[in-house]
Image (cartoon, rainbow over all chains, first blue to last red; front, side, top):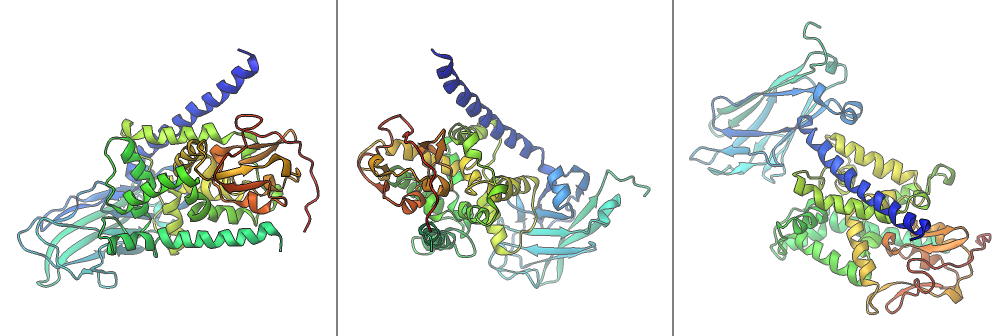
Length: 179
Length: 292
């Protein structure tokens, strides 16, 4: 085979294989980013929800450069979601308290009213619901070790009973705790 | 108005229709399938997800036809085989978005990537990698999705961006978008949806009954307008020779609308691109001044 013909086959083959490895690299890179967003998993009613600790220092460079203060806590993508483990349907209201900066609570569920934070349709026993919470923290606050602390409260708005509280702590481990 | 600009506006109309059909808040296609035919799926771009559907198909999870994405994947594959990548050339608002942005960027700031790096092995390599990664327990279907990013941008609330979305935006909108000749570098190199359609089109084009771009060498006046206007860089002038790469063509019809002598047409029958060489037709190209 002529050298020119070899080149014509070899170069595209090498590029083809390299491209495959680029995608494998992309897939691997994605697995290193699991700590950039939080998958919400809460059972209600429950007395103690496991607290969430989000570390700004675990963000990858693109996120840190473009949007470090916008943090997503959401159901979906394999997380168990907000599950009613009780025996009765529950009319749920979600409220965030104590966080610095804006907190946006939304849901893909059509029964969710953003203004009130209430699901107008009660959640049936064993069923789960979709929820997305976005924390918007200013860059200035990100320079502290303890960036923001707050709670997500789930209540039964018919009875006023507190179903569970989910503590959320945002830290920046790159900054010394004493500062 | 120039013939090419007139057709650009006409094409923009198709892409707006495409946006209305598949992207939230409209997503009429998915919503009709859900409400009228009672199919499962979501009323946004996820309900039309070709990437997840194709990935499931190739990884043995199968594809449920009676879902919004099942119907859309089937339609895209069949149409690509018979008519070429119709979705890319007519309805893909994500590809069109960067193409039209790049048209307002000065030519001297844009790179003709396709001239230097043959897109064929890259895009098929990306497609192969896309189908291989689930077997390695990775997934790239959603993380690097420009469709989802367009939907976010169009909603006016981009929400929370992860690192992979930011990287996608950088390549799709900037490096391979605004600053690439034709504005469709992302489509050429990185889009698995386009790659699988091109693969089917390149196979389908071998049959007489399918639709494809056809070339009549005798009518070609070597004006080079098709090369200048091809947003994918599928037509290139290399050493003053015209080269056509079917594996990178989205059948947007820009070339046949800009051709002053109807040397390039779209229809069934023999394509005639292969009459001299397998993938290219070599025609002496004389650069002439573009007439208004």
